[in-house]
Structure formats: structure tokens, C-alpha cells
Image 1 (cartoon, rainbow, N blue to C red):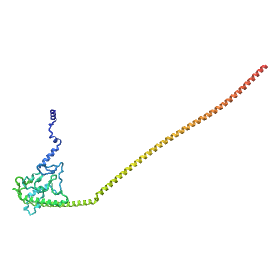
Image 2 (image 1 turned 60 degrees about the vertical axis):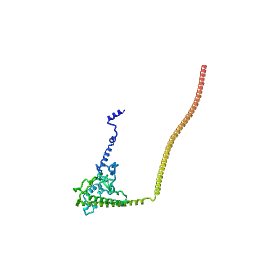
Image 3 (image 1 turned 90 degrees about the vertical axis):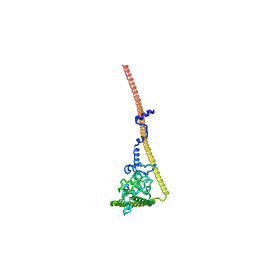
Image 4 (image 1 turned 30 degrees about the horizontal axis):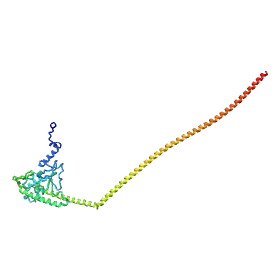
Length: 389
């Protein structure tokens, strides 16, 4: 039997190995695993037509997890900025030389570049997917993380409540100060031999330490762009603060209105609800009773109409029968009276006939006697004549 089964499997193209059946039955698993592998190795971008990365921290035992559908990653919180601005900030930071300028270094510093790691131990942060800093670095706990779903940076205090706004502002300021200090140290120590800035953004080497950039003076256009960026960031911060204040006022007003509209006690509300339920139940019961009474009256009226129709039919039948009986009785009586009259007339006629017959008989007997007497008289006369003759 085993040989027959093996022959059948060979004929149908089935070798008995079931390990690859899932990939044939569910081909989307292959695409999902390949996508996860490419995302983990940094070969694909997650900004367009790719699943969202939920967790980008690299550990020894956990892989970066991929959301099951598009755009289902961590939503971008408030105070987020574009990843392209972060890259441009790194390039501008490499070109900026704050010690040689009269302006404040904070004005020329882009806060998106504060996630640059200057340590040479444990590898560079540029090896991470999407330029994400390592989870064990010092700046990873201070600087905002990049959301892979949209390519935006999320500050640590973006999801705090309204009552924690001051603490969040203090933490953000501390993070910015630390980022500025790190940027100043990087700008002072990074000098290249040829004086050119790398365009790929990889400014660190894990084995040889930090690379050095040659100091260069900013052009007027770059200074204007930095000032414009600073002005725009200040305007955005003011707008966000104004929006936060308006949102807090609106929330307080809604809470106050809700408290004013809210009933004084929950027991009274429950009692009112029960009273309304009882009233509704009583109204429904009353309506059902009225419908039942109306149906009973309708059935009673239908029954009365049916009885009246039957009585009418019986009366008409009885009237017809009585008329027929009266007619039959009248006919019988008329027949009887006619028979009696005919019998009386017949008796009278019979009596008259008998009387006439008796009279006729008497007359006939008298006539016969007269004729016999005449005949005897004639016979005697003849005899006498003969005798005389």
C-alpha cells in the first residue's frame, strides 16, 4: 500500500513534503516575510506603499514588527516635522560653523539633527533603518523618535494631557539644549581633509571614531534660510501654543456645560427613567387593552349581524311556509265546500227525478188504466154490437 501511495504521489506530482504547502496555499505569506526582511535590513523605504513599522528598536532577540495593513502604525502626534527636514538639517549642520559666526548657535541649529550619535562604541546609528538611533544610546531617550508610518518625528511629550503641558515643555527644552550641545561639539570636532561634506549623511565610523569636517563659512543664502527656518519654527510653536490654549478653553467650556446640564443625582435620573418606562409600559398596555376591546366589540357586532341575517332568513321562510299553508287550507276548504254543494245539488236533483218519476209512473198507470178501461169499454161495445148484430 505504501508503494502504491508513493506511485500515486509521483504521478500527481506530490512528493509527500508538506512543508511548502503553506507557501503555495497562502502566497501572501511569502510577500509579507520578504517585505519584513527587506524592511529590517533597510533595503526599502516605508513612506510610500509599504506596511508601517511599529517598533524600530534593534535588540538581540526581537525583529522589527510590521503592521498587518497599510497605514496602521503609530499615528503622528503633534509637534512633528518631516524627515526630509531632518536630513537637510544634518547637511546644514555639517556646513555650519557656529564658532566663526556672530549669531547664536541655537539660531543656526536644526532640532532635527540632534539624534546624531558621536560615540564610536557599538556601531553607528546610520546603520539603523531610516536613520533611527540605537535603543541603548544616550540620545535615544532624550530626542524624539521618528514614526516610520509617515516619516515624521514625534516628541516625547506629544501625547500628554493639558494639565501636563508645562512639564512637557520643560522636558522638550531640556532635550533641545542637550541636542544643541551635542551639535556644537560635533561641529567643532568634525573636520574633513578635503573640506567637502558627504551627501549620504554617514558622518561617523564605528571602528575609527568620529570623522572631522573642515570649517566653512555660511553663505548669505544659507544664513537667510536658517533664519527663515527659525522664524517658521517660532511661528509654528506660537500657533501650537495658541491652539493648545484654545483647545483647553473649549474642553473646559464643554466640561462646564456638561456639568450644568447633568442632573443633580443619579438616583433621581434612575427614578425618572423608571417612571418613564412605567409610563410607556402603561400606555402600551392601555393601547393593547383598547385594541382588544375594539376587536371584541367588532366580533360582537359581526355576530349580531349574522344572527339578524339568520333571523330574517328564518322569518322569510316561515312567512312563505305560512302563506303556502293558508293557500293549501283554503283550497281544501273550497274543495270541500264545492263537493258538499255538488252533493246537495245531486241529492236535490235525485229527489226531483224520483218525484218526477213517481208522477210519471202514476200518470202512466192512470193512462194505462184509462186505456184499459176504454179498451174494455170498446170491447164490450163491440161485443154488444156483435151481440146486437
